[in-house]
Length: 245
Length: 79
Ligand SMILES: NC(=O)c1ccc[n+]([C@@H]2O[C@H](COP(=O)([O-])OP(=O)(O)OC[C@H]3O[C@@H](n4cnc5c(N)ncnc54)[C@H](OP(=O)(O)O)[C@@H]3O)[C@@H](O)[C@H]2O)c1
Image (cartoon, rainbow over all chains, first blue to last red; front, side):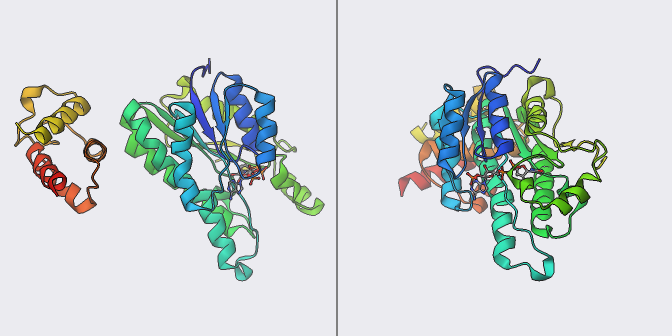
């Protein structure tokens, strides 16, 4: 089960905790991976751990021209692109009354618009080959909301709606489009929370602990696999019972 | 048959997996050749790639038969 050998994948945000775990898990199942992010050093060290079947493709997803060239670059490096994981994401938290246009725009650009442009580019080759997997890393916050994160929640909810529409458009082409929605995961993103916020959030998690990046990656492996071929337009929640939706 | 017509027919036959004799000038992609809306978008993309031209959305919408495609591409490649 869940064998992915011979497949190819592009993982954005692979320089981060969850993206790195996703790239490692895919690679461990036999996938050739293109890893992307802005921090070259982090990408290089990940590539050194993986050793073979890995290509480093730095890209700033806030830059539209750079986004447009990422999928062609991945296809050139990998031969084809079977699996796209839109994992890169950032936060610029602020109460809405104080939120600046730049904070709103940047979060929407990186978390949502870049994910759309990459999916649009990847779909061309996938439709031609009648196979593809597009997996977006959204967030529980996109479904339940969170004070101080109207921009982030909008981007993550947008990803879920976009995923459903894309899934319906390409369903007859052997392409599935799904989301994984992590809850509270131990990562650089959640290390930025202070002790009070951590305790307050943790109290909402039925399992009473943070999740790991590997637990998120396992959901991605499932959705990428042949075993999930009849699953599309869905959001798989990985949140320790934080929200049962 | 013009070179453009031949290349258009080849793309249609390959993409839709239909018999060559069905691909007549007045064959409608959706009604006669069993294309769905995504097929028509993919065909337009394939034409663009093959002929190195850009087919704007409003022109693409008016290409509903094989003959429409041949006429459009004949003109686009002549200029
Ligand atoms: N941690 C959680 O609890 C949690 C919960 C729900 C959802 N998520 C989602 O999971 C995903 C991964 O987050 P994480 O927890 O692993 O956080 P992280 O360690 O901060 O990783 C974020 C990744 O996104 C990339 N990124 C950010 N801005 C970028 C830009 N402008 N261009 C290109 N790449 C950019 C970063 O690349 P560089 O550092 O190289 O710029 C990094 O690799 C995100 O979409 C996040 O929203 C996380």
